[in-house]
Length: 114
Length: 111
Image 1: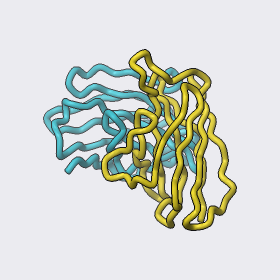
Image 2 (image 1 turned 180 degrees about the vertical axis):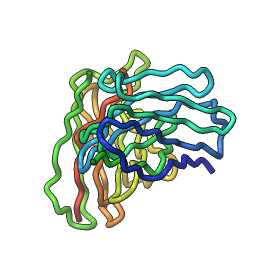
Image 3 (image 1 turned 180 degrees about the horizontal axis):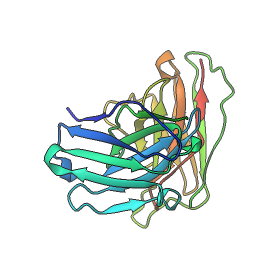
Image 4 (image 1 turned 135 degrees about the horizontal axis):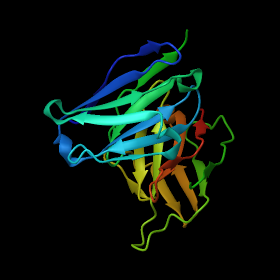
């Protein structure tokens, strides 16, 4: 069955970067884009961007263009998101989701604290 | 960006009663192909969001027929008939007509 398995929680310092992963299984990785979504504590969902695993093409929400970098490793069917220059505002849960939103990862909790 | 505005529910909703959640978009989500580019999700406590409805009214695989979606180009409704305990959580609408994809602020359902 389709699964998106995300990496574990991260505690990072302000100004640092964090890279999280989303490993896909149960389908052909290159057939669907991967979205990334941010959910701040108790708040709604924000779309960060997507990456096309087949071509490597990306599309970012303007709000996150200077913050997020999306990449993939086709050999391991894994998508990555790196978030840079972290501040307390970046503390949130980050989800990956497959193309048509039918499958989501379990989320990665990122805490930015000194 | 397209702004999605959701209404609140008069919580708690008695078990067995129906509940309707509204969502309004700042721009018509009706495509020239006749389809409304609107999704509904449920996020149960401590879980990832789950797709319930796509194209405004098509239930996702495995979703109970107690859930139904309707609407026009800018006004949408998710109806839950005979609310059950497992329906508790936050419901989100989302437009997928334009980039960036945008979500409503969420509507909490309590029983």
